[in-house]
Image (tube, rainbow over all chains, first blue to last red; front, side, top):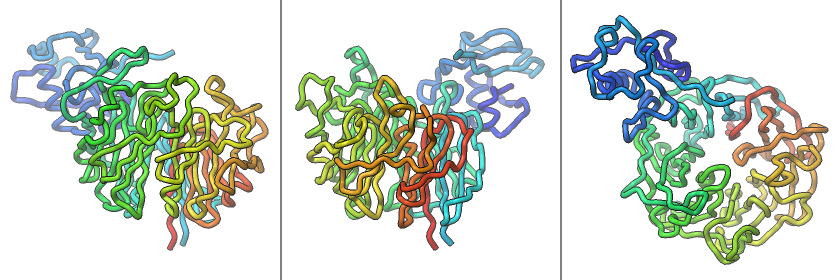
Length: 95
Length: 371
């Protein structure tokens, strides 16, 4: 899993992360597990109360936009097994 | 040994500046939280090494950081600010109903009575309290649940609760202020609040007696006379001698009475400082000359302080970007939207630029250590 720059600062890492789970790998489960491992990320990717993706955040599986993918559906095997990277991206905005 | 510590919040991180009692040379540490907006950093009066920082971005929302060692190490703590009870509506810009939504923390105000207790003033306007140094937050329901909150309406700067004042002699008193809404006081430690806007006159309001809708930019006082409040309103500099029960204008000979920050000398409640800004249309100082104005007589008579300030500057000073230390004579510190900090060690008589080139300065607090 790859985090955007702001969140790498917050997570105190410059590397991609490996998130492990023994549950069905869905976006919800992956992000829940990420927030257990790194609680300082709570609320920074999803709204802290509704758990909805924040407005300026997008999810990419390698180069494919999965932002509107069902959050509770099983992610593709390439993502589940870490062959491809799950990118959390801060969308470009501003001028 | 006397020490001064400046806590600087900017649009791209935090900086900590330290100096000895001479207040001449400063060591600069930072940026901390690089790339993040730091709306406010503050320290506990009981344990000054206990700091709180409001960290946010539009992408990732609100983070709360706390330090136990004066900013050397930081820990992200609870960032869940959940409005209590059913989510009701306030008024939107066009007057239509709009649900309360948390945007960010504008101010952390540690309690002067308990090291672990800290208050947060947030946008949309609400007051939160933590009794465990930020590990959990509860809304102070006595404030927002008052009936008038449905008439709260944001201004251009957002509906932010930016001022939280305590009375160190009376634990029950809490004064808060909200941009485009007004000022409020609790006399029972936050159980209930009442509007304290009598005497405020806002030109754009149709009903001069209306309590809600006054754009208060900042309120300050001196701990020596906590009942004497100074207010920089959108337009008008105002004063109250009775904890805000009534206000009267003290703009006097100011070149313009629009501005954002206001500070009071902690040792002299008659001495206050403002930074006049041309207007709400031109957010820069009159004639491009950034000046501090000081009254020594409690208002109306203001003197221009320009010794050491730049010949030309179109910078603004935001509401939380001017502060005073506790030394005598008191030092004054002013951070600009163009990233300079100016300091005076003699109650404003002379000024020195102590740093430039910082990002836009959003807030500035000073801690005074006297040993």
